[in-house]
Picture (cartoon, rainbow, N blue to C red):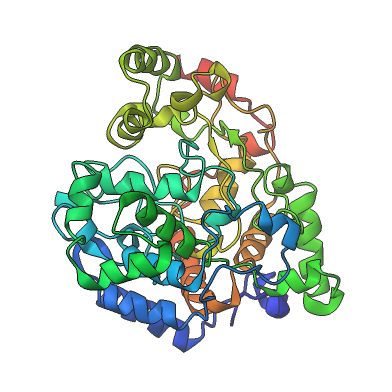
Length: 436
């Protein structure tokens, strides 16, 4: 049974025990053909992308305001067919990495929701970073890029992983270009797309152009949002009320015509890192480190290679209010883009709801909007099922398979479940006092 909203009678009752066999097969096939670094082979990924009916050029997606869309596409990179085609080619090209094993698609795998379904990303030489790979689906709608917002545009973001020592590992832009500069096909592609020779600026622009075609906001929920009340069941509408009411999801994940992906594009401390970090000491040490070099490249290094990663937005702004804060991720396609949070520490959407239900992890910098929710087990199950209905129809098979995997895992373990904190039968300070 699909978790699409039009079929929510069972999903909203958490009885989705029957999974479409095609979905299981597709997921198993992806796992069986894993290549180096855990990614599906690039040629197989390209085949999957070709089956997704992406636009050949950057155009206004259905249901998105043309005026709003115009603000998301820079005039010097309109996303012509030639630009998108070049970006697609670069996205899957492992030659851009130092050892020829990593492409953009290694961590943003088309068979895994354009993420990698790993806690932390793996780069050249098997090096493991400190951040979870966010999906490139709908990245065009994000006001900033990366978990800490250290890149302001898709173009700005696209060039950094290539020259990061533990991601794609190239020592500099020239080294990255050297891998493709003498390729006659690329020379022709760059000429057709941007009118010049192979160069790094146009390389990043082409990657951004391709990523702007990865708009996945087509689900039954969208038809409901556009006024088709029968697009989802009465029970689904009740869960939508829970999402916007008692569960307070819409405080940061409001979904509307002007915000189709459900992210406020702001940064919040929800306490994920507070379980194992002394934020105050870490912030003081970070300021000392950044005093000598506050460049974007240095921030990139600290985010992926050091414990300063846990400070989030603070490394970019140096503002005390940003300590431990990370960007609000989208709820679109959230079913196929786990594990969750900046460090991949929450394995299932049940873990995510459990984390919020108990009021996050208390720390001096916890966002003021985070508080216990007193959600019942039925309400938690309903919310999780609803979140799976926000996945684009084109990813239905992946979504079905991932729902079943997460449900089975959640039945075995719920490490962040704490009903006493959620219902205020006990308060965090009482726990702290009891531990002394």
